[in-house]
Image 1 (spheres, helix red, strand yellow):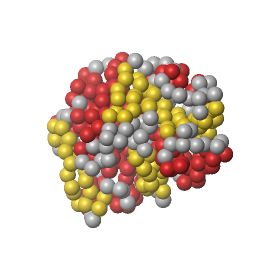
Image 2 (cartoon, rainbow, N blue to C red; image 1 turned 180 degrees about the vertical axis):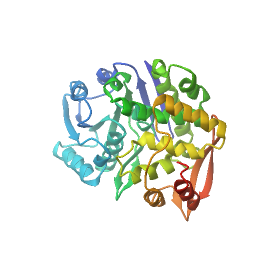
Image 3 (spheres, helix red, strand yellow; image 1 turned 30 degrees about the vertical axis):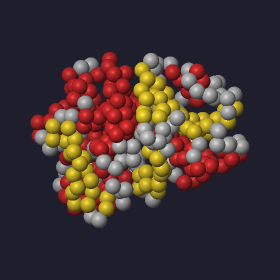
Image 4 (cartoon, rainbow, N blue to C red; image 1 turned 30 degrees about the horizontal axis):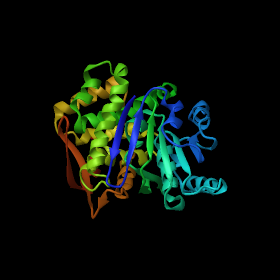
Length: 338
């Protein structure tokens, strides 16, 4: 087992990375309390049953698969279920699934009685690599992604690589875009695994190295006031493209992959990244409405007074923040640069 600890001024919590850890959650924490396991109908039912078997007072709450679940009506239905179960401040929410489940469940836990415990059990590549740690929780509103939310950290995260075996291939590859991002901004050796090695035989190392990148950044900047913004590499343009595709035409990681390309300042590095995308099967271009993408970016939480902070990479492993006019991003979208 690999164990990392996120150490913050406000709290600290462990990340357990091990094949089969899905069946060992109860050995690491107290599950003898009211527990609500929140999952979606795309997650194999057997995973939820394996978790519930460890929870004497556990119940299951299943929502529809996809970004549509990150909505106020679904969020409210979860809170109503907690109330029905007699949840107290000592009760526990468990987020079983991908990043949508983590965002939705974490936000519900953050709001119920002003904050109760929750545990992350990510079962997708994307969530195991990135979204399961860092404390960001949110729902979408009016087509804008993650626009209403809170910082609320889990008390533990359990990463079981075996759960990735049931993912459709496209979903599996989609999540690896965040690992490529981590390599580009902070870990050249991680990028080299994709560029030079049989990356599928190095999956656990990819997960671990990606988590370590986020661990270092989050520990230094918990509330995204400075350094942590480098984790948004590719996300400003990516979120715009994702919204233009109506939160469904392209997957999140695919949109982030597209959003990174214009922010690579070295053409030779850009060509290397494109080669990695082709090797993985990530898109190198996409059709979307640039006006719709730009409109979504205007509402992005990172935009203010006509300016937006973007992340640029000039050399492998080195990221920097730059304030640019929103209009410059519109030019990239309309000029077919992404």
